[in-house]
Length: 202
Image 1 (cartoon, rainbow, N blue to C red):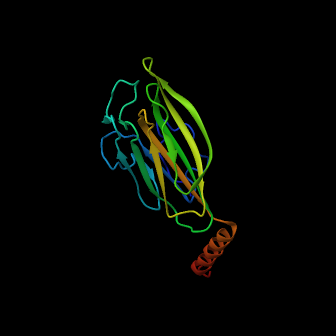
Image 2 (image 1 turned 135 degrees about the horizontal axis):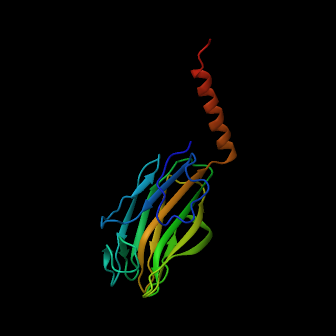
Image 3 (image 1 turned 90 degrees about the vertical axis):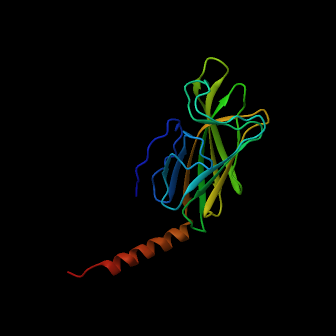
């Protein structure tokens, strides 16, 4: 089953499994200073998602348009500030879950934030330039892929600014639950049994 979604402004590396059964999609653009922050866009049939923000030393907190290029709505986390994302997902205790995280951040006077997923294994990452501001630095997007096994009922993602500070403009998170083959077989048998019970004799 596919469900519709609104593409993010900085959605450079969408996973090829987005929209399939067992997946979730959530996007934070931080257009307001709400804390905790609900996603601006969410397609999650299994629950909710939220972002709790902690501003560190020398952080300005939420900013609308500080003149760092054309981006608007962002969090200046300061030194060691964090954004903690809690995301519900399909709960199948067997199998594994994959997580695709895209973080847009300002680099120049600041450096890239770190991303951690407790209990998950880091798989790969890539970076792309989003916008040069022509003054102090540029906006970049980092994508990272993680795997957590067995698949949990929810994931927690921790984005932490460096000791020199960090500004976050947007976060996009996709998750997918991949059952092990035995679980897939059981689900298929159960589905066929339901179809047989629903069949009406002619």
